[in-house]
Length: 185
Length: 319
Image 1 (cartoon, chains in turn cyan, red):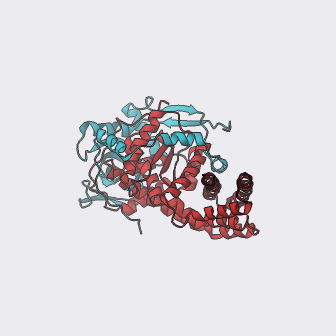
Image 2 (image 1 turned 90 degrees about the horizontal axis):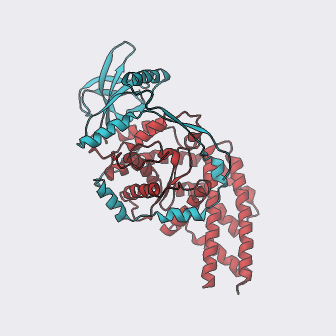
Image 3 (image 1 turned 180 degrees about the vertical axis):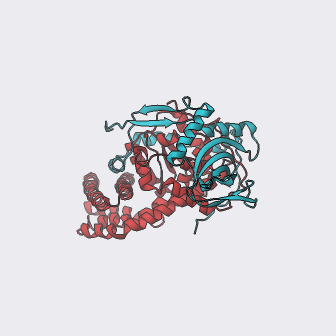
């Protein structure tokens, strides 16, 4: 163990998801709509905004790559977002979750910060903690020596398939068939 | 009886030498294109040294047996050839993965929290059971590192850093991350990288040529081309593991979007943050991974049955 401790700041911001996911658990229904109370996002690519969370739903607008959005709700593979075009025209619609990344430009983060203040989340969620655990560099991995004790410990945790099944059952998880899909061209 | 012990010892030794070299090269190669040549040279030198040391140990052992030095050496060569690199057996894969994983554990020990390790093994085992290699003795561990990263090694070894674990907020996200690593093992991505680098060939070459008079030539041979091909394979392998990770989590009954959520979260981490230095060097940026995932998914995930997120059951770390 090298003593080169790297001091790092961990920012834990108020977790909007935790709230909405809790809602999912409480409701416990299929494909619930989860309120997201305005998290900032950015379009990763051009996509169509739709009236309802279905691919064949009516188009209500378009997103261009890098457009700033406000994430309002989540439903399965879809996010409900609001956008404001440079023309000032506002639109709300559903877009695929994978077309949007969380977080925006610095200006939209400021907007999010203001929204947090307005909703009373500011001050309660942001916890800055400092930890002294070192990082794991390529160099450290390169020079690392095999550790038999730790390996034996890792091996001691090995479970059987039926252990996994019991655990899944306890959580109400059921296996479903779903084929892999191939890469983009 | 003694001969078997001797063989076993030697086999382990050879395995250690090869995998240590492979592992370090794999990482240093990915870490920086500029350092690659130097790192490769260093690793190759180290390997030669280790092989020499290994040889002296072997000789020392054989001196205590009835076997002559020559027969011990030829046996060693046979042992080396016995490891089928082109199409390794399950046992060989596990032996290789064990050495690689043990080295990572040498750099970062397991988090001392039995409940955490047991929990991660339960989730991982269930997700792995949805894969095409449910028969492997899957092992999962959380290691002491504030980095955001996860590692997979052949034969069913998966490690995730404490730093990454702390970014997760529910079981579906953990399932997605583990699903990504499980996919690497199912698709034998790491083995393919090793084969592509032809690292094994020098390993074997050094053994058979009695530590190779032409080391420099061998080094040059892998130095050129290997890096580029490995990089291309790596990038596409990451995208493939993302696609498969999403499907594996969904097959297990989880919300399929746990992995994308994690990518969305770590995508917001500043690129200059130390905790993502290695991850961002060895993987495409999360934004790029999300884009690729979205492009390949197209409409295929639109009507997926809603899965569970189970944040109520998610094991939270004390700090």
